[in-house]
Image (cartoon, rainbow, N blue to C red; front, side):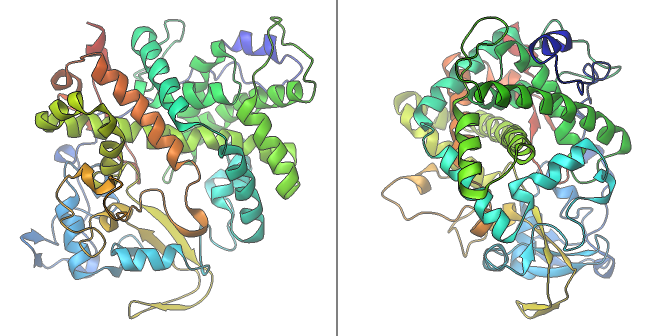
Length: 469
């Protein structure tokens, strides 16, 4: 596949052929039943109870992400301490909906520390170069202008058409995944089908040639692992090599976009709808150069990668647990969109995010200092009864037009409200829609599932191999 990439964009010499087949294996045993988890924080070592949940249980807000059921723990935090300083984690932890909404809408809380635009382990790496250009990792005027460009590019995307596109790609992946021509690293496994789906769907929207999509999945797996909190030097090295390949793809696509009458080496017209639209918007709204356009095109893929996979997996698990809901969907298939939105609230694929104070601040009676880090437990806020009545109850009707809009923190809020939220929901809907129509045995698919190792994403690893037997 790397030889094919060179054939497409041979003039770019920054494609790392040797690294293209290295794959970071997924850890399917991150279940907390087999993990040793740290206490909540040093000053809470004595047992305290809230609603039947001991706050000295072996969980902290980061380890809880991949626990079998973190929600009683989150409920205890919301009820007792919606904002507190965690000595062990060395940061504030916000869980209450009101506190989190205030933080997300306050300019004093930034997405990166003032003196560290790029995490130190990523400095000087190709992955770090891309990280520093991402709109979601910026604040202030430059972020606002670039986000406007992103929103302008996304606005014409037809979500119904995207559902159909996702459905078709899921059919393809179920038949063809994992790619037979790819070698897997020692002890590794190919990326999950649910992770591959957004790369195929969004990648094809961006104009990525179809025969580069399988490799793009592997590159995106490595890149996402590299920029995640707690990434290892080996993961950063692999992610940087993957970034070189992704940059080369989009450099080639942008070059072709500059010459609309030019055809690719196979004589076929190039479809660059979303990429061309974003490039034009970025130049019009923000005057951004190619490096920023390419980085954020990669960002479109990376943001949808785990969020969509988590939505698909958590929705299938929710349906497996609720056969009556599956039967209702057979009679009312249009409900599926509301089901997926309720999954995004009830079992969020994005469990937390971080903010950094640029100035001293007092919030919820707590004195906070410039430079302090805050972990925002979005999944806990989604289940705050002050924001969503009966939060433990799984109710897709919350998202019906006849009901008031529920609070949904999964996709952030304020200046950093995710512009791709509708796309992620549509991609998940198309994927789940095809799985249900295929009459795949959900019992076998979710049996013994675990979660991808992550500090913020709740992404189940399902048994997709059972769908091919």
